[in-house]
Length: 383
Image: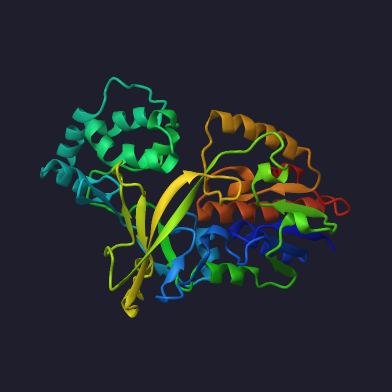
């Protein structure tokens, strides 16, 4: 029986482990943290009892029916709509920018068609082919909305000027000419009632899966038929040709009686506010928010990721893309090793995409094993 090592007990590793062990393979899952679930780890706050997202909030949203059905096998998914607010110059607005935001910001009462015309008149018509975040924003909403909602927040989040960032970052953000303040536009949206860590534990609760926590891959001295590596791809190669750049987060805890801000997420785009947002975690579980007398929130500060920090957001500028290409070329030469997940592929992946890729990768690997039982490899599924 083939023995597989899966590095990382987050969603990628857990889904892969269950898929492969269900087919009769022995899987060792290792993680250097003391818990499963990676950055979507949730746990009860010891003082308030509120279930907190220890590494920042994660909201599950997808249009992939198979993935939605998969997560529902292991979690009681409760309805949850992500509604984000923003405090700008002492006033609160709804995000993403929508008809309410526009009317409130400009002191108007425009209809959808009127708002389209109004915003189009403010947008920079001379930017025909935007290539940077700033150009895309100015061509999309104009100077005033850009400076109020996008410029300062972007500078704090990414640690660089918006005209240094690729246009792709802004293309993920919607602009709406109705009063829809649902941050996502997906068919399925929800939050696991018992938290993500419990869901991942259930995924990993399968015959043939061994879990070792507080254990790094570098500590292993065992033979495996294949390794699925969800750690940083540059770390696997000991950063010997350079480090890929990430942003990391620092969290400042706020505790209080009752309610701090009345909503789960409040963004702070103003440049003179050092943090990017405040997240109040009992509001991520509105079905139980009334059960808690005390509340807990986190102020989030974004900064460059150092050697000992937790990597959150890959920056993926030109220099990083070139370095990533070199690492990917080396990864292709690694026998019986496949790089997976957000860190292994140096991509920002939503949870549903992470699950979809792990399911598909597991299926491809099993197909390859059937093709060549004596030498199982997954050379076609490299990062």
